[in-house]
Image (cartoon, rainbow, N blue to C red; front, side):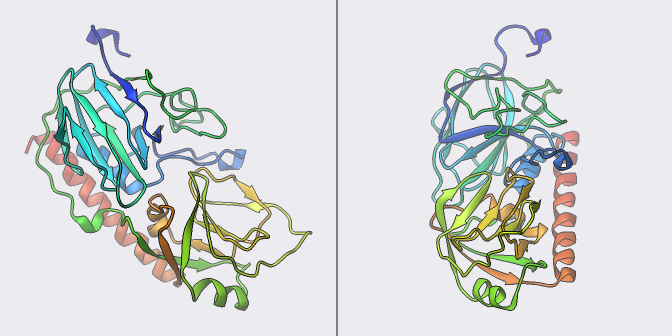
Length: 323
């Protein structure tokens, strides 16, 4: 809270939604056994922040499946990017993928979405939150970061850092930059040392369905495959994007809050360019896994990163110049 602004500041959460939490770009201390965390759809985070002139890693609100209702006590510039949530500002439709000016006393209501799972709400200045290991991201299982290490509750008070006021500018984000939201997904993967010929055949030649067991740690798939068993297998490092094979043979795709080590075989890993899609996997969605080469994965990442950086630069230039 900024005492220099005087009066009521920030916003009050009237309804928290299904699971709304403060997230940013996450942590880089996996060597200490701390999950990375951060927004599950980093493309939505980066573009939402760029629309309001924030740094790419600024903290915002990640909404999941059903969003919150928030009363603003001061004017703000906001943007909501990600899955196509229904959202209104004082009852009027709120456009997604745009910067929108909010006036003091207005109420933002984020409803549900028919496709995808998550969106990122950015506020110009970036949301405050408890910083741990250099990040304000909420680790829901460990209970730290964000707002008291938990999802929002009614009555929570949100504040953000003050920046020079900036009016909402018209800016268009090309649809092909946005993370696809299903209901059908093709995820490009790389094989690891655990990938055998049998696993390649059983994992890459069939569709899978996302089960209801899906959260920020991982998304379990419904169909099972014959999982190899090795009681002597040591625990090895995990990273988001790995596909784990637990003993019941139902694969688990790891998301940002996944633990840093695990003892299950991990025969595949989703390429970096497709990681944002994991954040939009919704129970009931179907997916297929397509193996690509490391050269293909590297090229896809470079292409995506180049497009995102160009879009971010142009959006921030528009904010600075007032175009």
